[in-house]
Length: 296
Image 1: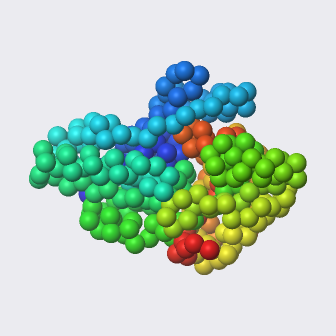
Image 2: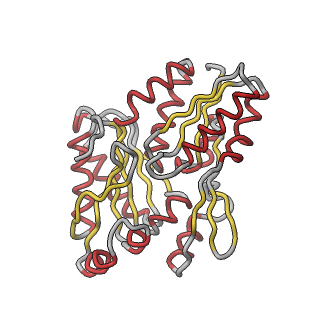
Image 3: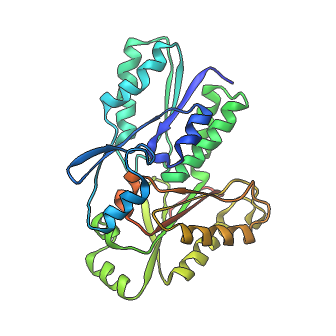
């Protein structure tokens, strides 16, 4: 395997075991809840079930991005070991962490001019970001150089699709994604907003759909529309959820029925504590490779 380190942020929302088994270090975002600061450490400091239960009981977590100093502390040990770094950053459309990583890189390269640090703005989030990390790992494992892999990621990152729905509108209202009036009416009418991540890496509402059953069907239709080779799609499919595993399984079952050539079964993960602070419980997201992501 090529001699550079592949790294990412905790907001890739994959299990810690995934990163440990593949030797992919990750840097943690943080959040504050009930007067205490927690690292977004993939459910170790606070189990996901406890986290979402606290939100359901009224807790309002506030998140913090990775700052420049934290990035420097994260990157420098690898540079001291004589390793180059390819860091896949959380979407700049959702956080300033990409810019912080770039500032840290410039500072560190003054001290380690013989080293290379490549920072890729993934324009991706949650387990969609994780799916991009997974693709990068497979290419690195196959021998791709840092330069070649960085170039591939830049060329193909917008082929990664993210589709979300939420049955709890409280946190979408809190984050300014929908108005208070829309949240109230949506709750009364059982409306589940269907959203995606656009070409700027921002979360965008796309449709207001009544009932969970219909929004699940519509989300899988989006996969039929956009997936590479349509229903003959043979790539991987990731899903994630915030305390609504049964809903994620319904999506996974429908995906399996519609796409018989998948590379393995759809894999289901938990939405982590940082992204979950903004979605709250009741969100399901679907990720796959497809056509070039453009704004509608």
